[in-house]
Length: 277
Ligand SMILES: NC(=O)c1ccc[n+]([C@@H]2O[C@H](COP(=O)([O-])OP(=O)(O)OC[C@H]3O[C@@H](n4cnc5c(N)ncnc54)[C@H](O)[C@@H]3O)[C@@H](O)[C@H]2O)c1
Image (tube, rainbow, N blue to C red; front, side, top):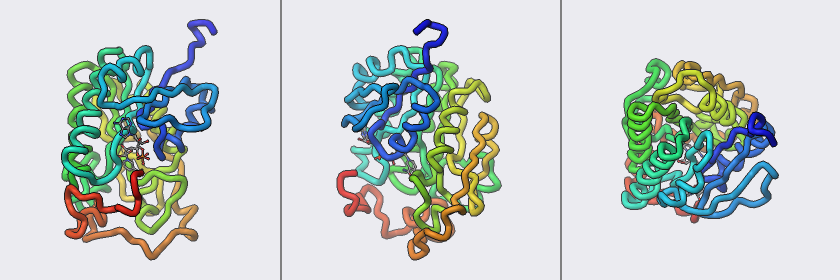
């Protein structure tokens, strides 16, 4: 293959996880060369995919995995409440190591998987009016995501990178309960967000955006996303008839839902039934 037709190389941390698994077919279809970085190897690879097994906390591994890449989609880490030590190591240090390896290797585009829980104690209605909400975490997990965003801001300002901190609502193949009818991010829209990160719109700089679909019941202000070319197309409403209306997962009209409730204890694994996932 000639240098001119060299495909864009996208490194995806957490490449064996749920969000990455839903995203991968879109990356393959678009013709990207994809590197899947994770502690474990994902199964059934496309010919455009390569696997890198290691930790986002390991600088040497990350240097090797990001050499020659054009962008990093940083999904690797812990996706729910854990102990402070676990979250600091995996989510905060893991993000710092990823950004530092990106900088060292001249990777100028980074998408960071932040979360609603970075701003969980804001009232839900505030997310409609404010273009970008200031951090107001609801858990140590939320603090780790606020720290992730702060690191993204530092690397964008200091080194001229384009870093998108995407406050993901709820990923998944389809919305599963009443709450996610407002917060769902479809797999296709997660791919649109990757494309926006790769585009020149809004570059360089740090961009905090809502990563949610164009949901009829959505509460997210999509302006900041539009400024980088992220225009979600899907709507959770298409699945409304099939969702579990018994699970509201809401609390006091706050963005973090049940995670803001007193029973959801800081530093504790509140979902032991989910096992090691
Ligand atoms: N799924 C959602 O609804 C949602 C919402 C908001 C934010 N997010 C964020 O998006 C990201 C992906 O979420 P997910 O639902 O796919 O989670 P997931 O748990 O399915 O995937 C995360 C992946 O990261 C890997 N990982 C963990 N520690 C690692 C390490 N030290 N080095 C390398 N890889 C490591 C895991 O093995 C796993 O495959 C997470 O950062 C999560 O916090 C997800």
